[in-house]
Image 1 (cartoon, rainbow, N blue to C red):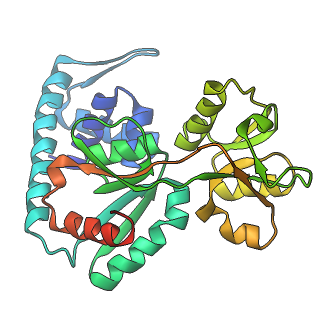
Image 2: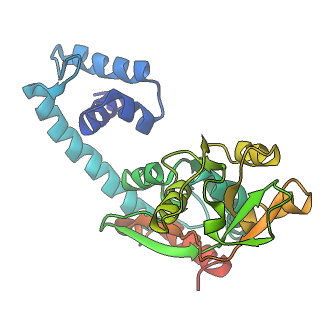
Length: 291
């Protein structure tokens, strides 16, 4: 049996969506569809009932899904057991994180890890917090570093940072210190709609009954900063993400007097807590960030 084809079918059946399954497997929808079709042709049996607005498994598809779930669950268990036996100074560790964390926090961690474990291979995956959580749950990432969201019971999380938000603007008339109420109806440039930062900021405006101004939504950190520099609006960042730009005079750093903080957590599966590689990673973070 070709396990790439089986994995493709399993992902489609689990998500009930070719789009989501393709995103999880990091392949195009056409490639994913081809894998599933090849599996069906191999046994000359349809596994999926394809409809315009519906998705259902055939009886044979339900049987295949049941066995595929057992197969990949056992594979995950074996992977964990081997990680527990492996050396922390070699192997691979896959880190999932938000783009801004990858840009400003992860390099310091990677440097410290490589100094201690030069044979360790690191793979960095960037995405929004909820997608990183999915990757950790699906064994695609060993750890995640994300802004805090709701976690299921099988996830262990530890706060590694709690930076205060600053406001950046090119407005010369704005005071150096402001209250959030002073940003009522002020034009903003915010991260994409599924961003933890955006959700937190918008919720704080709503919680305080502060009317939001016109918002531009953008998924790219550098593009957000450039739009602020051009005077298209203001935005919110932890100071570590704007320190160098402020020194270069690209925009103004405005202190917000209200308590606006971003909780950044390290997350990993409880089943993985005995992994020697994970233990080494957590030890590095403790030296850098954790109490």
